[in-house]
Image (cartoon, rainbow, N blue to C red; front, top):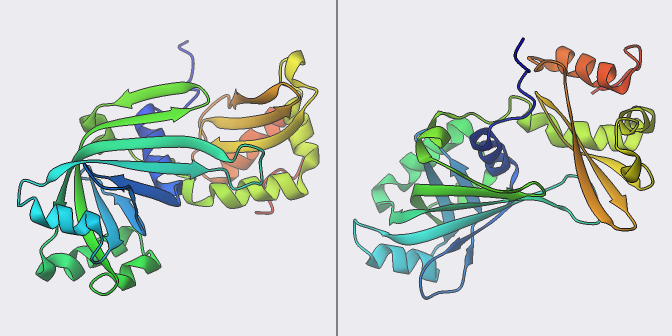
Amino acid sequence: MPNPTVAPTTAERVRSACAHAEQAVLALPGIDPTPTSLHHLRQCGDVVIAVPTGSSAEVLTGDSGPGGTAAVLELTDHAPLPLREPVRALVWLRGTVRAVPAQAQRLLAGEVAKDNPDPALLDVGHSSTLLRLVINSAVMADSTGAESVCVEELRLAEPDPFCALESAWLQHMDADHADVIAQLARHLPPRLQTGAVHPLAIDRYGVTLRVEGHDGDHDFRLPFSAPADDVESLSRAVRTLAGCPFLNGLRRI
């Protein structure tokens, strides 16, 4: 029988990282990077970005005409735990950034709100202005290295189905389930079993542990035997991986 899938695709990881990332900066030629108050990667493959009204990024984009200007959006995905090295991943989305006509700003904000009701959308038309980045290429880097993703794969990909709940689960595991983490840590190679172990990531395919050791930080992925489809199957997969199906695991989340 073929081996089960043990990890999300790079395109899925990019989608999830973009959903998690709280920090992003827009880099344009000739000006300092501009922090964004909103970024939303749409299913069509472009990114809606909010920048301060009157900022150099808004002015430069507006002056570039309908063809737009080259730009890179850098997003930082932080772990939801106070780790020694909090950055889990970096994503670079390269393409062409274009101005959104004034009369279309609120309409586009409403479209974004259907998928991502971010409070920053309330500032559109006041202290912030929407821009649109048409992606040409995407690169993601984490502890395993850097990988590129073709635009078509990114358009077709979805974030992990547990993406929105991941932070709460990891915080709950780290604070209340040292027993589960200790059981999971038994799967670590002997050289990694002397450091402090924390849950770094969880998705439908497995759990990633962060080991903070004397020789640095190390990430180790533990795949499930089969992908989880819902909360109950995810809880069961974690408890089974921990080696005791009767542990409470994530059931109380």
